[in-house]
Image (cartoon, rainbow, N blue to C red; front, top):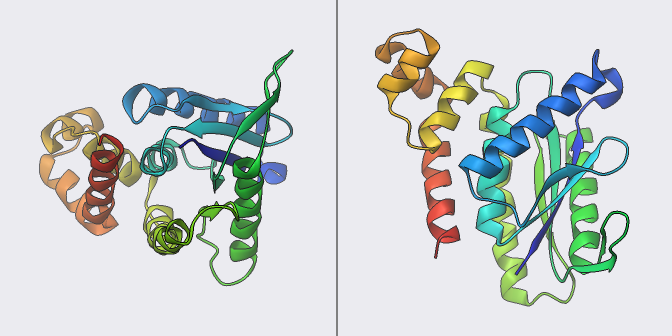
Length: 215
């Protein structure tokens, strides 16, 4: 089952260097596609401040989008709408044009993220919506997944840029010793930074997602 993802840039109109933000997102997307769960269609810019991608499964999408959130530098942040449903390509030239219930659900999902941010959850960044034809069990699973995402976005959104880098490394199995060497700090400082940021729960969630994606 393919998973549609629509991403847009948070605060794109207020960005001091909009082109630099775009480049940062594209660089991060390429890195994550190399180092994390690979997209079936890698995240790429479409129009305006939007990007689209297709992932082979929901766990793969959730794991990859977490890595993207962690790897983006301060000043470059995205919202993600994830759609579960049938995808289809309606034109192949000059650029593939995608359509179908999965993409409509992804559009609905990103609109829900905007609504959450405008109300009481400014940290919200990720939402999943299932197409109406998906079965009841799938829709129930998505309720639980969205509850997880609200908590995950809150934790990641509160991290410093360094804490996100360290958490990214731990998700990919980099040792605290190697992270300390890369950051030019002590291993004890790495351990304390990860503890303060709540990284343990984020890393454990990533491990669960990648294990499921590999099944």
